[in-house]
Image 1: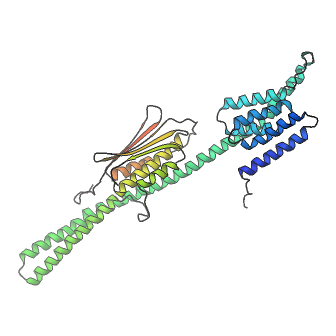
Image 2: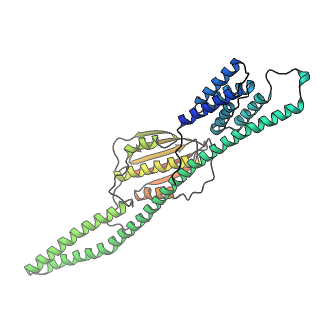
Length: 376
């Protein structure tokens, strides 16, 4: 069953203003024209409630003081509660609404003051203010939880992919060792024996056959060494022929990271593609961790070259909003360390002095394939 279509924000604002004006028309019987005009102006101010929730709330408190129209004030109170991160401000808004709605205007003479009625009016006003405030806080919590769940889903998917990459990288390394230790060794013996046969026989046909065997063995060894290098240098992705990220995509990655981040790239040339992919994936995972574990923090991403080393740092400030206790297997950092080690580099993380976090990736600017005679 398809979900019912949702109204756009503009349509919602128009509907809210229409309901507030209707409540003003119903509740303004006998009111002074200035009071009615102020209530209408406050109803129209609801169009700005998303951009200026505090200002709109202050404007709508005037009708609560002088009129029985409450929809405009309750709507502004709900919007303020759903957007404000300060519990103290929300409580102050509830007190202000209660004071404006429960105190009669103009004030009656002191001898006509009825304490019991005043207490009832205050209790009723508090209950009236509690409903939109609780609803607004509930909507805010639901919105935050939805964002966190989306981030967790994305992080879990990334961790799953990195785990699969790690398994594939280990399998490729195992195949490379088997090819080097077994196949290369046996082909090397064939080449040596063919060379010995080439110099020890006098039959021209046998000498030519030995020469052919030796030439083919040497060519096979060269191809095996190339295949071993490809297996060891590969990052284990399931689709190596698909377009891979490069440093040119860092600007877009940072711009769409969902956090306040600064990017500085200072490189004299273009590093090899494996290095660019490693830097991109490291920055991507670091920014994901900032969104996940440090809401509201600012991040600084710097990529520069120091001698023969490509240095990438991602530093974020402390979180400015409360974080949820979310489970994490830290597979992302494990995968990044394995990727760095495959390229001959290192990845380190440490807390920053200001309460944030610091990640540092060091990679050779021009990594070389492992020597053909090495089994590591």
